[in-house]
Image (cartoon, rainbow, N blue to C red; front, side, top):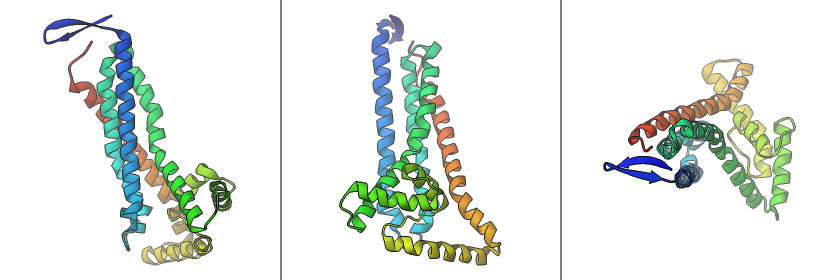
Length: 235
């Protein structure tokens, strides 16, 4: 049993009760964070990325990932507050280890979500009768574009290089021409060599992902610390 002060009274608290409360609180926090992430991804695909002229530019910048600030602020703050339910000598360590596991998982939900939407869209646009058939077709495309990788891994590698996703066989056939035209236009504007432009197109996605991931980490850490300060000590 642990003792804690509440309104000047000494209360005995069962460790099991506190542990269950911690698990309940952190589960709720994760659920809220993930729900918000799904919400902004859905709104991004349905509204923001459909804006004429600038939609593709915003997609190439993965602009909706800026909402990770809100997602990971909730995650960090929630865990910071919930940590006070555990004994001080190991509560912080438990939360930090859990967050170290959760941050990359929640961050990568974007790729999983977009992959599922893409496969479903391809299945619908091409009138493929089964999900397995759509996956098989898209895997063939991904293997060709990523040196043999398929599924979510192939999708993640491909979209780092090129944010535009073909949803029909006609789009696939026109993709190389579109990519070449885009690079030539960019080269004319910037007056850079073609090889440099190609490398910049490739690096764009990885630089953005590293940037957004670092923001997610720093946001979580800052809000975790703030969460620890929100209330006085419970134990």
